[in-house]
Image 1 (cartoon, one colour):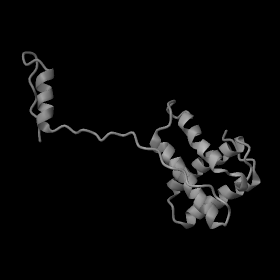
Image 2 (cartoon, rainbow, N blue to C red):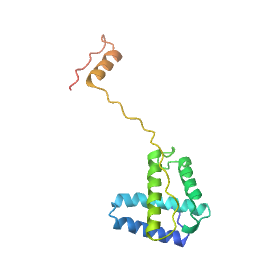
Image 3 (tube, rainbow, N blue to C red):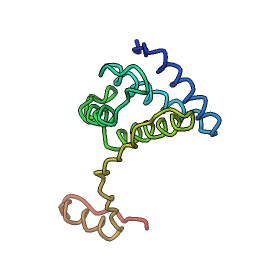
Image 4 (cartoon, rainbow, N blue to C red):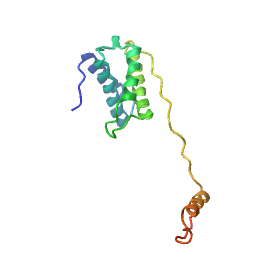
Length: 148
């Protein structure tokens, strides 16, 4: 069962934020992701004793990123990847933009995490042939010809 937001202001802000995203022509899938992210963000703030936008300090907001860094990925049982955390950060930053649009105080935007990805190395046909030649003993196997 998904936990529910108890603060009436947060429930209204969540609803208004999602409607705002629709007016900005965000796709249904993006809105679905943003809804999940903003709900986790607002629930986290409630757990920290924040019940309204006026108490949303930059310090509390930044602690949300640390929470995400430590949180388990429910689906896979590991930690969240930086890319997933960055999506949540992007949602929070968009929410702060929404708060400014409706003339409410908003904390400073959160900074994004660096991606830890290394570019993939793609082998050439010649390199693949060399791998076959070095890994298979020629007496037992024949190297199949590679089609380029």
